[in-house]
Structures are given as C-alpha cells and as structure tokens.
Length: 260
Image (cartoon, rainbow, N blue to C red; front, top):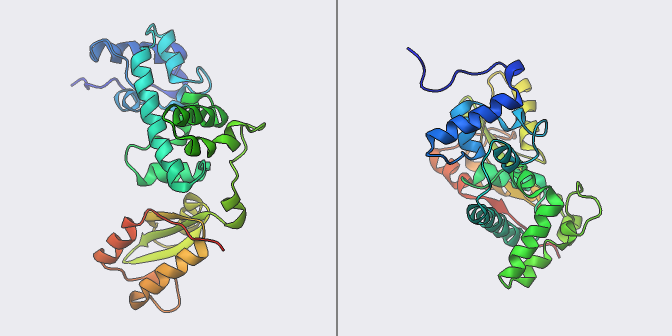
C-alpha cells in the first residue's frame, strides 16, 4: 500500500529543486497556501538544516522562489505574534535574553519560538533587537524599548547582550533529571551538556524532567535541596521524590534573586 506521505528522500537527493517541488506540492494540498517551517517538516521530513543556510537564509525567500508572493498582511501579523512573545520575556527578565535563555524558554513554554527561528526570520540577533525596540516604541513602551538598545546598537551582531545584572550574577539553571527510580537535582550552565555527561556516567540513561532558569544557580540549588531534604539519599544530589514533589519543581519556571 502506498503511504499517504511522500517517502523520505536520501540526503544526497535533498536538492533545492526537490525542496521547491515539495513546497509547491504541499501548498497545493493546503488550498494554495504554503506551509510554515514546522508544518512543512511534519509533512515532508525536510528539516530547516536541509535548506538553511545552503539554499536560503529565510523561509520567505524559499517561498518566493517557489512562486508564492509574500502576503504582507499575514507576515505583519506573524511578526507581531513573534515579537509579542519575545517582548513578554524581555519584560520578565528586565533585559534582552541571551541565547541559552531563549532555548530554555522554548523548552518550557509551548508555542514560544526557537531562537534560530527568531534570528533567521528577522535577519540576526541585532536586527531582531532593533525590530523589537521599534515594536515597543510603537506601543508607547519606551522603558521596554530601552532594554533592547544594547543589542540593537551593538557593533558585533554575534555578541551576547550584556546588562548590569549579568555582571553581578552567574546565570544558569537548576535541573531535575530522572534515572531509574531516583531523581538528580543539580545546577549547571548548560543543561544539554550536563545531560550528556550524566548519560556517560550512569548505567541507565537519565531523562530531563524540568529545568529552572536562575541568576544564582548555587543559591537556587541549595533552596531545592533544603526543600526536598526529607527524601534525600544520603549526602548526594539524588532524591526519592513523590509525584507531588516533582509537580512543585515543574511549576517553577525561573528563580531571580536580588543582589545588594
């Protein structure tokens, strides 16, 4: 029986012509409207890395070459949605986020755009910050717009944004991972790297349950160790948590501390 979805194409056959053909095919099945990046991957198996940056720098460029003129009104609505979500995070942090914070927000908040999507769509971090500043100014939020200035006016588009708070704090994460029956609760500045390190050390591969962004990893870790002290395994970072304990940890999205 022939599958409804097109069969996977070998990497060597992932040409520009094939991708353009798939854009047109899926658009035809979608009443003439081309798909977004995520749905296009779901329908075809063609990843963003298959076309960026080899063939195009923006998805809109691929759609244009496939013969679909951009719908300015829809594009404006899509831009406003992305900027609104990013703007909420900027106001929450009190500054423009670094890439790691954007990735963690993507992981913890359904629907929040991946930083790669944001940077590609707006033409890089500096251009994104400048566009968000304009977005805030258009809404009369001058204070929020000022939070984007350092990155928008940076002479190095690839540098991470800096802030007064960042100079006084080591930003990182408190993570909860499960391996076997027990949970490990620790701190790190790179959750993915820590997960890979533990996978090598432990007999059973750990699974990330949740991570909390914080400007004081050591202090946040100490807080959770004290809170779960009743189920700690000796002096280790391993805990026999209950479902209620895990739920309490997962409800926490970030931990910010005041520095005097």
